[in-house]
Image (tube, rainbow, N blue to C red; front, side, top):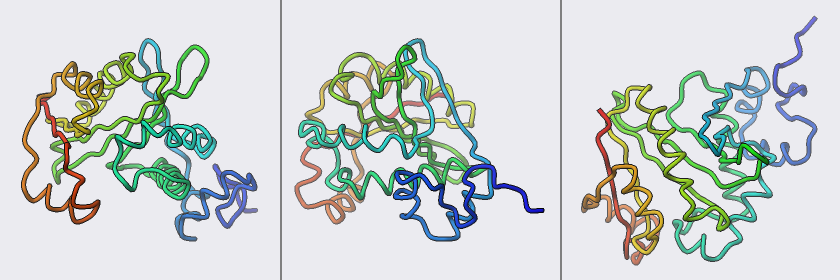
Length: 221
């Protein structure tokens, strides 16, 4: 007798839930089969006010509402919003959460008291020897400038230090003063974007993109 897959019952990797199936449809068949046959490795981090958990297909509506905010869109890169982008991100996050070892974590930030969706944060481990980690946040207007990035960032730094990371990196729009302030409170300091990085960003996102991208870093050894 065959065993029931631990995550999604259908052998083709679909769950039968319409919202989840729309997300899974962005993955190739072999990826859906992998998800259906392997357990999810749920990462959870907690702070006094928030819980950081794996992004899930059920977060689509909250992310869509976040990306519908024009002010929010003005601070993200040109490709980082829209229905298709959200679905691809959720599909990727779902696949990554089934890997035993991974270099990228997409986490939802929810309040511990009521489970309200505050935004998302991303950890991207870089370097062949796990030398650095890129941190990023997208917060709803309701939770902007309320210490969310500092509080969750402290937990993220502790997490990546445990993975052997020696340096944390971040970048943001130079007009986004609350973000810059939060990164500085985390001990990060501004550094120059390398010329080849600016060139690559212009090629991918448009000639006027680097109008004001700031790079910040901090050693956590």
